[in-house]
Length: 178
Image: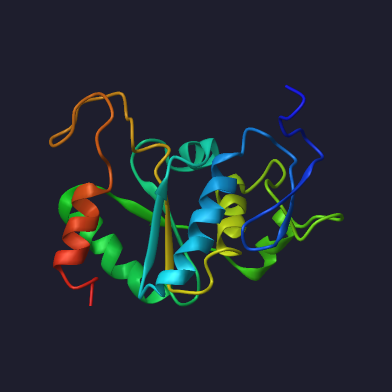
């Protein structure tokens, strides 16, 4: 289509940030970025997103755990969310969003790039989303490997399993891990 976006295009997010499109297959994070930015108008006390975002997270953690990333304000909730995950059988593994990783999404022609290079793919996606979520404490769960494991487990079927529902319910019922 003549109206489709292509590698090399620059798009402008709802927030006004310009985004260099290096990979058109990383479209989900573009949509999620606008949703995270839109959440600003509600002034949330905590912002949590779950997405089957990267194959890189599956490579790192297989189907045993979801990747968990947090901005500085969200770090206070990480231990509580991980504890909820252990209780309900939906494990999480924290991944860092150190400043050094900003290089992964650096662009020469836009504010940010939608993908990084070969290494740190899940973290690059997290760093990208962080640019749109720093208005509130924020937690990002990359559930690409856990949403569909391909094998039956104690509480889940072989097919899509609703990963995160029990986790978030336990976390919320437990007072956000506090």
